[in-house]
Length: 305
Image (cartoon, rainbow, N blue to C red):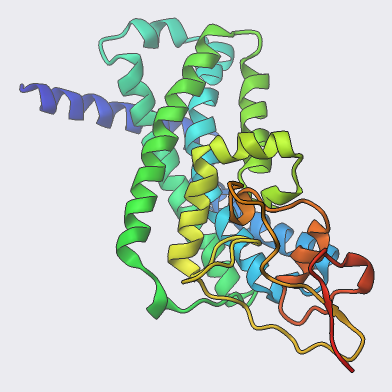
């Protein structure tokens, strides 16, 4: 057999073994129900959380951006962090890691095969979350305005980064046997909090914002939002992106300018906006929201009587 054929056979074997491991703990019906309920629960919890915090956020363009980022975040959790959990499972639960490591299939090929099953699960979760948002939560975007080619290119580049960062996490778990579980959980929490998945990175301290900007997944989620729904995250309302309609303020209300003064040389958009009155700017990004006076910004203006 040729080398590509041998590699394909090894990948197929690793994927088959990964499927057996993922689905062997329950009968097929229970496994399918669990696989469907998990992303649906994620979508509904996210909607309830934002409705409780911002009231109207579930109907705003800001929430739509976070919702889309959460949908694609399934690939990071299942594939990237999942590679680290493969090492933990093989070593701690099955106690077969040394046999896998020394087998002819090779560790990299084995991780590739196992991650392919997790990729399929993440893709199904993505479709379920977006479908739930469209049909149940009423989240809409213009399919005619979707930029398919840049969206596909961004998606593929993001998957490449996910796989190679997954190898890094798996290698880290391989050499840190007593801390592998903490490493996996820490990586999952850090990528959720630092990449603008559930809130803008503007809310982070300045030093942490620098770390967030250096993470490729921060830009991946931003690219997916812009190419799919037409605008980026809160604070990234720039030329060429869709802006949510603004409600006309009543007399005496304070509204926020969408062009805050940013010193020359500072990063623009949500990657480096000024931190004061972040809550006010977040509320201003939601349609139908009139910002109270105490949430004003240095460039807030009072409407003339």
